[in-house]
Image (tube, rainbow, N blue to C red; front, side, top):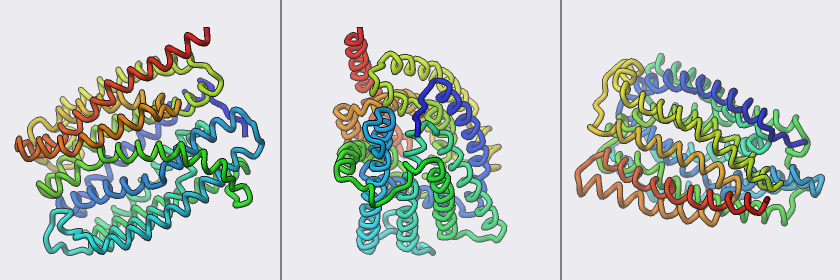
Length: 439
């Protein structure tokens, strides 16, 4: 399959990505109040925390997906071996399958040694949280393997297709939760089953669609290669370390709040985060095509293309900042209209979430460049430093300064500043050196 990484295709992905993100935003607005009304504030807080835990587990692919993405772009651009793309794909599917089934087995065994009610900050809960977690991890594990198609779509510059997959999955969830609400069912188990099956169904459909595009994307044991497996895994492991450190940074807030304050506080925190995530998510969708484009530009030594891409992303950031400030100003009436009820929001939470969103978008620009260039020597240490700093800072502001959920978020904000300052310095230095050499 020929690789098209032109500016026109990047813009097409941006337009479709923005459209899909807008649709996704509408579905999210409809979904949250229905789930909140269906489960109630306590169970909604628990379900949100479960989703955060699942997001941790969903990165136990040892970075194979991201490793495949970069290696696939490089192999299709250079075309050193006509079967190299299929070797990378086949090796990734086979390795990931083995890893995932091992992770599922280990999790199920260790889950019996965890007091889930205590972990979620509830007593004598009316549902079996251990069984719910076991069920979710099993189905999420299966979807792990099927979701490798997303890495391939990213590699061939069809980022918008991943957005479309999200829309379909959200729609299935919305319809399913609406049925549960009408049936007056308030069980987390049913919501968890809907979540699991909706993801698997969508992944199967789009995997089949991908296989029809090119035989290069159909995995086969015949094309398994130890060399390609090693290359993908070596790069993937570095991505994995970075991902796990980032997960500690971005996904522990809900668990800390639930455990030390209570599930109800998670609800208000997650609602604020949910609204601001609409903007940051749309921004990430817009800039995500530049990852694979950067990888291709590196392969042909065109660092001016990378610099031009950064300039384009800066222009988008201006709009993102305006959007974040506007949302902070009008947050409460928007949230009340959306949820059809008023919630209590701790003083400073909304403003601080706005700051966090702006830093997140700034970091997203440099993430595309660093990931595309595979600059693991800077990516990994910075991610680890942020992950290590986050929990102590959050607990310090929560417990010592009695700042509640605002303190937890403040710890995360201060941690993200590390990459916001350090990463741009190294990226600009890298690009400057290569542009000088090009001359």
